Amino acid sequence: MSRPLSLLFFIKKSKVNSAGKTTIFLRITLDSRRSEFSVHRKVHLDLWNSRTQLVMGNSADAQEINRHLSDIKNRIYSIQRNFEQDKASYSASDMRDVLLGKDKIKKMLLEIFQEHNDEVESLIGKGFSPGTAERYRTCKKHVTEYIRRSTRKMIFRSKMWTTSSLQASNTTLK
Image (cartoon, rainbow, N blue to C red; front, top):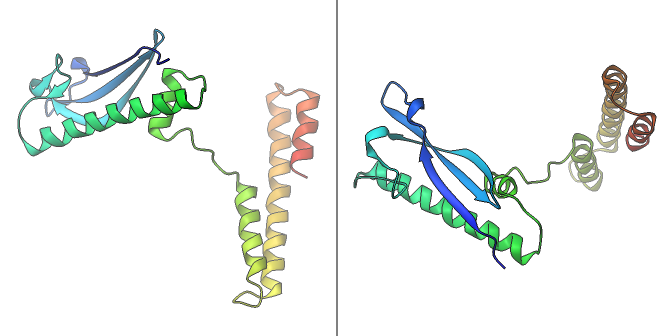
């Protein structure tokens, strides 16, 4: 069953720039919890209709902004449908993160380095020599050791890590 979702496009009248324009924001409200963010569009204060939550007028700029707002609204509803189809728990912040692309898993440096080295290994004799592959492996080993040493220094400085956290970080970087 769909949870009640509220979308509100609004402007902050107190944040008008010298040209008389202000940023448009979106507030997502889900289960009485809010998440607000900028939609990265500016509108002249006099052209914003807070009742319709759209830019007034037929100018190309107004039409482009209104299309952008409509697209965002449709993507939010689509994100909600996807969460519900997956039977996943979600919040207004989760919806915002998916919309803004902040939910994507970021690869760690050593993972990317290993993928590169694997690719170089597969291309030995087809543009890469065994010596080049060996130098890349050596470089990765040095970077791994540098990260291990740097991580230890940060851990000792923070004093927030427990002994088990320190042991876990040592085993993952070996």
